[in-house]
Length: 546
Image (cartoon, rainbow, N blue to C red):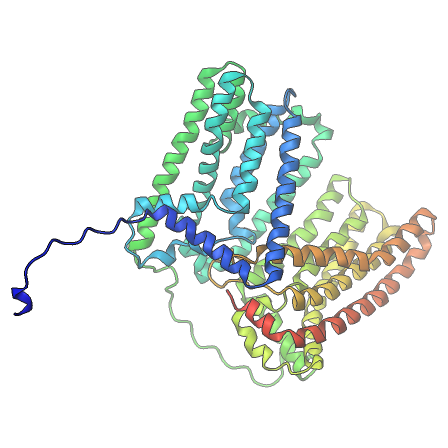
């Protein structure tokens, strides 16, 4: 009997299909769990970052609850919620964060419809430390404002609406710009965008510092009156209006949030459909003419010492000039390092010692030295066969850092002293800056060996792969605290000279800071070199995950 002659039987019932949303949530949790299983250090870093975030959130909630009944509670809460919503729109693009499960370009080949995909991405975006921290702030905000039954009802509605709006805003912005951000031109734009964000944060900081001089929190009432009608804060503002009995205003403000959420979801879905179906021409460009090969040791290479040092220094300088993420980090550090002391000097409230902020910002570039090599670090690792090789490698990278930062620090200190007119404190600021910069070179070299993390290639604004964010923060913050401790002798000497009115002796701090910093930097490189050579497999595995 042939197959065609076989009796026809009833088809088996189809297996029940699982909704897309639970799949995405489980996928995100699985990726997080698998990332934490890779090493005990990563688990410790994640737990520590979670604990710190929860402690900060608890402090924020407590502070907001204590505002309950204060006449300016509505002003503070509305502005805080507006800043949080703005942060969800822009900060995930510029700071260490991101999640590959939320990158829609990875889902192009899957047979997924837009509506369930948007819902799944929205719900899975609510899983993480950031959403938990935001939820605590929103709950604290409504607790500070809710009075009476009407206030409680609007508070119950405002919390989920605000959370959904923040997440939808973040995802819609990211989806609309994903191809630009993943293109070479988009990565180059990160330099300017990161600079704008960094400068904007500094202006917000200085504005907050001058609140007391402008009449306290009451000076913020006009700004709050505008922000309470914007979608990011209108839902929380409706709780304040309902508590005061202004039910019409409360309903209108709540409807603004609902309308904005619907509009964001529609724009997000439309961008997602276009991303999934339209051809990607963002990276198409005319072929560049071939570059002439350099011959000899002209230019900068002719000034550098021969051998491995020159090779490493040229490679690091090319990263600064050509790699978009390295370039963005340097431009942002240079801009913020100059803005803080100079803007304080313009306001007349600064000090020459604010110029040390430039050394601190630039010294951060020493951390995670091997992460900027990404998967190409294996070629560097092949050339390191002994602690001596590791020492020369780290020393050359440190020399590049000092080559760029020492002149900049000197200029910032001199300009700040000139603007303030305090030339007597200039030597102390210079010596302290040199010591702090060298201390960060030392701790950055050790942190690069002990706490390496990967910088993903895709996504212009993703600086840490998922699961390594806590490790990155602990590496940087721990290294900065250790650097401050190492520089404490110079700090103590500078403070003593000021308190004892030995200002003429401050000139000894310039050579003293240079000599002390050179010794600290040399000791840090010596400590980091054998650890780098011994941990090459672990470093290579950590930095190659992007």
